[in-house]
Length: 175
Image (tube, rainbow, N blue to C red; front, side, top):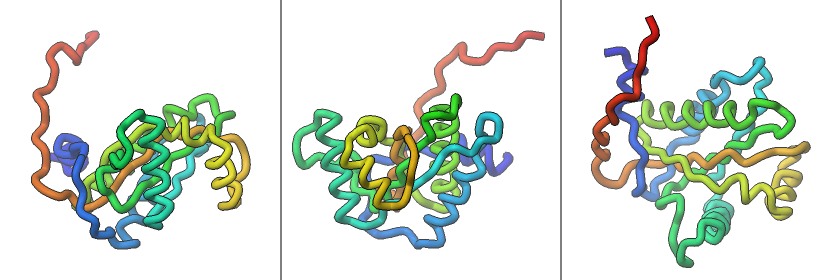
């Protein structure tokens, strides 16, 4: 079987990560894979921010938890030591789709390197907050950005989840 299709079939969302930090080389390779996602009209209007600083990662988790309505102390990133924030330029017509394709590339790249990942939402709400707009400014990132998602990445703690059965009647042909 083709390696890319195999990775697509085998990759699963991980909900329990080890605290061990992946290598910087692996993180860089995953981020690079994100830059090769297709984008509407080739605009490449998506950026990624890899958060490996535990203090910032934990603050992001607290805010994400609050927005999601979970009990205090719940970690919406499931212990993953790396959180990649995916943001897209608001003035690009296809920004949500483009950011979604980047998320897909990040998750497949992580899987191909033996790492687990999961897409966590609420980046949109976070980056509507002045605090996170200022966070971007502090990084030298200008403009209007919409949070597309967080790709939590790390080593899987436990067994790889099994695939759920594929739903029927999802493929059609017009011949």
